[in-house]
Image 1 (cartoon, each protein chain N blue to C red):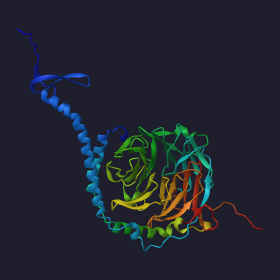
Image 2 (image 1 turned 60 degrees about the vertical axis):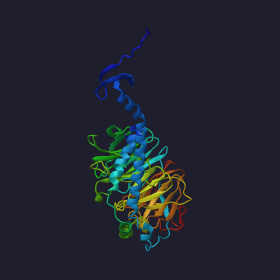
Image 3 (image 1 turned 180 degrees about the vertical axis):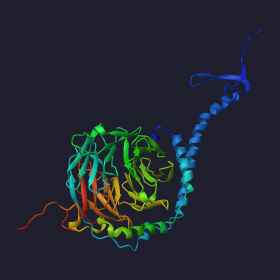
Image 4 (image 1 turned 120 degrees about the horizontal axis):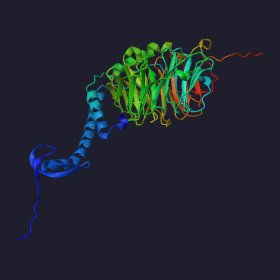
Length: 69
Length: 408
């Protein structure tokens, strides 16, 4: 538990973690960013909050109607 | 003849090094021991040594952090918004509050959607947990917890149970029953036990396991049936405030955020932290995976939201404005991941264009801090909970005469 650890123990935990992370494999942002962009573009057509939904298909449309006479 | 004083010296095995030497009496924690003069010297310098060790650990940590930054910078060849330069900008954004759920007696702290895209569970400072039908606004179930500040709640994947907890340091599961004669509280099952408050909880892919985050600095995975601890996750240096499970296709990982300003990605099976990110300037209140699982967003008390790309292993976008000075409490993506919704302590909800980094809409309506925000499972609406005791379900609108959102 972090709350029970001394400053030294917390530092040691952080150090061990950092030593592991320096060895992680990484890819270029130009490649991964492009993949994020492509994912969005492929899904954008089905995103109701992005494209909007016609009122009659919207499950949260207003209840009841009003008549104008 | 003068009187002579003789110093009696005990000769024997040293209590520390066991060598046969002249011994001196030392007192350690009120216990008397006999040390040789060499060990006495070493003990005296140990105090000094302790401080040196702390300082050298700090130095080592700083230099490793520097090295990690260097390695990450090598792959930072371009910014996300540059990659998205040719993507069409977003047009007019009109959102409207469609439902207001009233019934909590105090601050709403957490909410979650049911997989049926219709039901919502919410929890409050007054100890009540309510299940709503968001289409009709009817309350279907209500239970009173034995503690106040129920900071976490979650819907089970089957829709047949809910989990919640807070200042009781536990996470409890309540099966949902439609039998009017049954008392929901009677079937309560205590699953998780932490040594400090429960800040977040989530079922995994089934009703059988729950993941929890706590003020005690740890996250944990529990078996619901037996209450057994399956795995614990140590690494945060302070309270853990939030967690989110990776979308099931991307495997067994989850991300957590804490008061140590770190976001950490964990392997659920081994308990190991795979990656960690420390770029926020304050507590991380909310983390949410990007729909594809390759990235996650965070919201923090430093008034910014950030996007972290897991394969590039770095922060790739910051969503902030000079005019936004209050902390972001809760974030979630729209279905495609193009929009990031974030609730803030200044009572507003900002909608960000994830690719371009710009804000595309502000939503007003809540009369106090927005504490929790989730997009519905099919992406048609999002629900926000607030310290103003209400929850609001908002969705897009094709009507233009709406007063609740502004294009910025």
